[in-house]
Image (cartoon, one colour):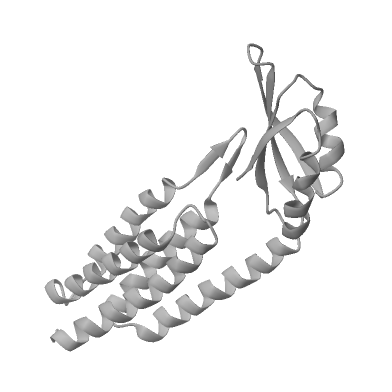
Amino acid sequence: MDIWTVLLRLGLTSILCMLFGLDRQRAHKPVGFGTYSFVGVGACAMAIAAVDIFPDNPLGLFGAIITAIGFLGAGVLIRSGDRIFGFTTAASIWVFAVFGVLMGAGEYFTGLLTYAIVWGVVLVDSHMEMHGIGSHQRKFIITTNKIIPHREIETILMLFTTKHRLIATEVNKAQNKLIFSYLIEGKKESVNTGLKKFYDREWFDSFKLE
C-alpha cells in the first residue's frame, strides 16, 4: 500500500474521530477526546496492517480488533445500586472501532455512512434528553447537615422531575449528616433550574448531579 493511501486513511479517520471525541468531552461524557481518537486511529492502523500483511484473508485480524475493543467498552459501564449505566458509551466505542477498521480497509462509503449514522443517533438522543423523553436518568446525591426524613427532599424533587427514586441512604451520626442518592428523570433545563430550590433549605449542605 502506498504512503499516500495510508496517510489518507489515517488522516481522515483521526480527524473524524477527534471531532466526535471533542463533542463528547464538551458534553462531559465519561469517555471523550482521547479515547475515541485512540480507538479509531488504532483500529484503522491495524486494519491497514492486516490488508498489507494478509491481503488474501485479513478478516481474522479484523475480528480480533473488534473483540478486543469490546473489553474496553465493558470497562466504561457504571453500576449504581441495581442499575448499570454506560451502555451507549460502550456501544459507541465499539462502533468507532468498526469505523476505524472500515476506513483502514478502504471501505470509505460504508465507513462514512456509519459515521454519519452515529452523529444522527447522538443528535436525536440529545434532543430527547433535553425534552426529558425516554429513559435518560441522572444520579442525584444530596447531603444534609441534619437528620431529616427523605420526604422533605422528595417534596422538592416532585416540582421539577418527572420521576425520582431513592436508591441509597447513608447516615453519618457523628457529624449529624445524611446522604441520599436518587435516580431522577426530567427535562434538562427544568432539572438544572429546579436544583436551586434546595439552596434556601436550612438542612441543605451540598449536592452532586452525575
